[in-house]
Amino acid sequence: MRIAILKERAPGETRVAASPETVKKFIALGATVAVESGAGASAAISDAAYSDAGAEVGTADAAVKDADIVLGVQAPDVALLAGAKPGAWVAASFDPFVQRERVDAYAQAGLEALAMEFMPRITRAQSMDVLSSQSNLAGYKAVIHAADVYGRAFPMMMTAAGTISAAKVFVMGVGVAGLQAIATARRLGAQVSATDVRSATKEQIQSLGAKPIFVESVAGIEGEGAGGYATEMSEEYQKAQAELVSGHIAKQDIVITTALIPGRAAPRLISDAQIASMREGSVIFDLAVAQGGNVEGSQPDQVVEKHGVKIVGYSNTPAHLAADASALFARNHYNFLSAFWDKEAGKPVLDEEIGNAVRLTQGGKVVNPRLLG
Image (cartoon, rainbow, N blue to C red; front, side, top):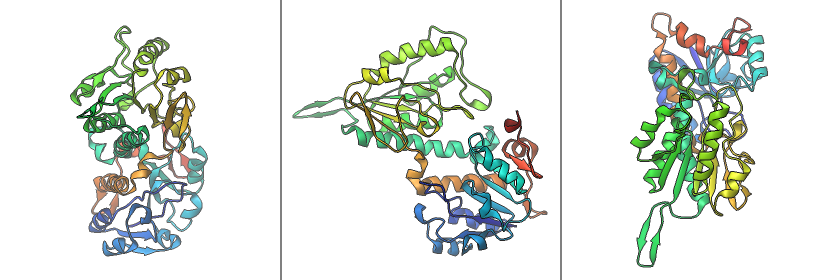
């Protein structure tokens, strides 16, 4: 069983799909691990560190040659995988709804594409969930970057020269990223509030010491879809939420938006009129900017100033924490493959529940039901 790790080639991608820690663990299972030279450089992992862990380090062609499994952060182009074994597995993030042509190319090449972002949100798959591990870091980074752009202190400070009021931070969307954003802003001393379309998150918000901001007048709308993901709100709820948020957002110094719906453009949460209601010097961090944005006018990797408010957002937020993001992504990969490792076969054998959820292509065809509907 040969596992290959290539250097990421997507613009701005600094992460790597394996760490020296996971290389050692894969070798302990009986696998051979090959790493492309320089694969970990941007994540502060040297070729020597991989070699010391027992990996073969060389060119991309050498790493992929006769590989049974290729691990990636973002799925590599099919052209890079020409030397892999027929039917080789490629486990990575595929963004299959947007990058459908890439999925089709994998099918035509006879490769088995395994989309890590399609990992089901069930208890036994939590340690394999790349969306959660990366979103956790993204929520943290959003607050840290927003604090830097804000240019004022977060905590209340009482000094001989006078008192500095605590910054007011509003988090919109309380998934993994939102919860970490709340926790980080609280640790920095901010006065934090948060909202979500899922009413079940109210207790989570309160448990972190933040104030929940929820529409109470519209009953019976939970906003939670299959697998714990948020679903799109009804028009009635959207109207009620917009009115509530408009009044609240005008009083905030920092707003963090985190709302994403799998397979669809990010929902619009903040309009130009709402931005105009905020005081000058306020900051909005749009974590969904790469998927179309929650904020009107937001642009990936740019500081957009509107009505005196700075709107920021990264196209790839976890990549700004490359070392930690890589370590977690690598563990997700290891936890995934090792959970299904068959000692007699000397390779992983996926079960139906998780295998069918993440498998995009097999036997020259696109097989995932989410792409066939």
